[in-house]
Amino acid sequence: MGVKIEVFRMMLYLSFPVTMFWISNQAEYFEEYIVKRKREIFPPDEESQRKELEDFKERMRVRKEQRLLKNIPLESEN
Image (tube, rainbow, N blue to C red; front, side, top):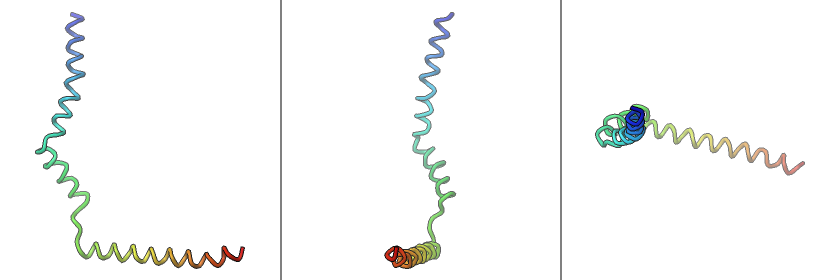
């Protein structure tokens, strides 16, 4: 009886990860679940959103440059 239990446990230990790997690598599953979920989280960009983001990044870059240029004379005096 003990050997049969050990064989069953070993089969369970080996078959579970192999089965999960096989299921998770099915193309249909990937397409249906993962791609749809990604599109929910990260919707396709709209041109207005992209332009707004680019403008914001440019304003932040200019602000950082001005702050750095403002601090340069202070550092040279010290």
